[in-house]
Each structure stands twice: as structure tokens, then as C-alpha cells.
Image (cartoon, rainbow, N blue to C red; front, side, top):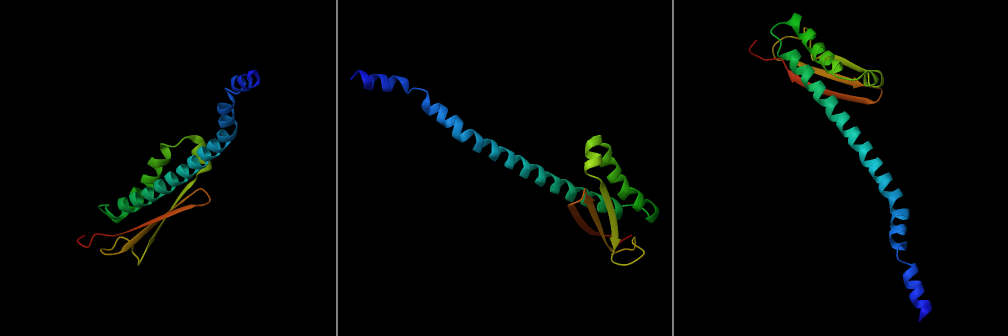
Length: 132
């Protein structure tokens, strides 16, 4: 009986220790994975929104001279909000293309393609207002 009582008393903390030793590495890896996925999805969402805003600034311009300036101004405003490290790691390039030229003709389809860093690309298209 003394042996059984000794075994029961000496085993009190082992369940907690086993839980921490065996599950903590899995939870840590899971947390890192979820964080990486969240960062990637935010980058995709950000680049799509930036492309949409750039093409919208282009097609809603009052004249052709301001259209390109306004599209690139959206990019510059976004860059001004980034940190220096983010500017170096994630360089942003804007490319505007049109279905036919000149781009600012009523009914023309304008596509803005944003390239962020080396691997992130997003595009958005919009028509120039027919009643210009």
C-alpha cells in the first residue's frame, strides 16, 4: 500500500509536463504557419486594391494630361505610407495598358497591372466613361 501511495503522489505534475513538451512545438509551428498565410493574403488584398485605385484614378480624371499623373500619384501616396524596409523589400511598379490608343477615349478598356516585389502581381480593369 505504501508503494502505491508513493507512486500516486510522485506523479502529480507529469500530465502538465507532457502536454507542454509534446504540444507546444506543434502549436508554435501552427501559429507561424497561420501568420505567414495571413501576411500573404493581406499582401494580395493590398495589391489588388492598389491596382483598382490606380485604374479608377486614371479613368475618372478630367482630362488626358492628368490621367497618368493621377494613377501614379496613387502609387506614390501608398509608398509614402510604407517604412523604408518595406520600400526596399517590396518595390512597386505600375503598368497601364489600353485596348486601343489613345487611352483616354470614351469606352476604352484600361488595365492597371501592379507588380509588388518579385512575385506579387495584381490587375484591375475599368472602362473610360462613355459620356466624356
